[in-house]
Image (cartoon, rainbow, N blue to C red; front, top):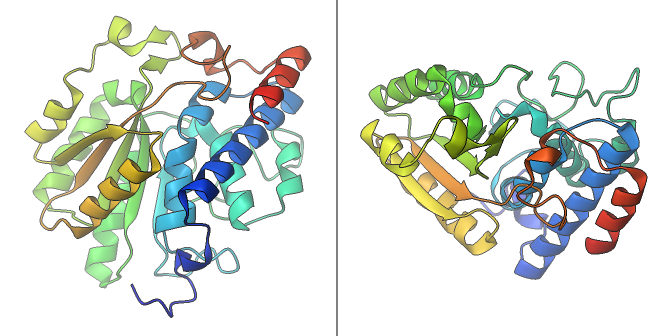
Length: 282
């Protein structure tokens, strides 16, 4: 990537300290948005913060002033209930004012409970049903190859949605077509709507399953920026097959009473809980 490319992320914060400060700011946005809205999904939003920060502020080529320019990198939020995390990231990246975050889930807002590409700048796919994002991302990756475009496609999957059969049909297709411009990231927080993933439909050994489908599979600490950047660079430099990054994370990361607590998959913090969460994220 040319350093002269005005759409490269070179002007964004790069130091570890800056990235960690940004992650904390995003978490404050998330709990505030969901708390003010009185509904939403804080747990799975908090678990993927470092992943989104690394992508949007350190890796992806995007242009908030021209969100649909043809050679932009694409990010697909397959785990659509984590919309607050994506909205907070897009706002801090400059796609819309940060103040707009407090309109989450309100009448007339551009920030719906699940993402809507027709109204929110920077959103690439409508979401709601689980398991569809990887197929959508594969379509974009294949189109990029056929059109001779240089962009890359990143798809963030929840681990619970990896129980969907469509995910594995898509994995077969991506390997068959050697889509090396595609990177899937699994937010492996081990909790879904009804409880712990391994109690509902066990996924382990998850890395070996992806490898059996022909993917390059990497497993990392999903809250470690050095490990995230290294894995994303390995994916970018790999030829001939897609890459999946299994990012081990903590659901509700950063807020003590939300961490590893299935209750906060889809429950907003009460006013006193919001106050406590903001103290812990200060």
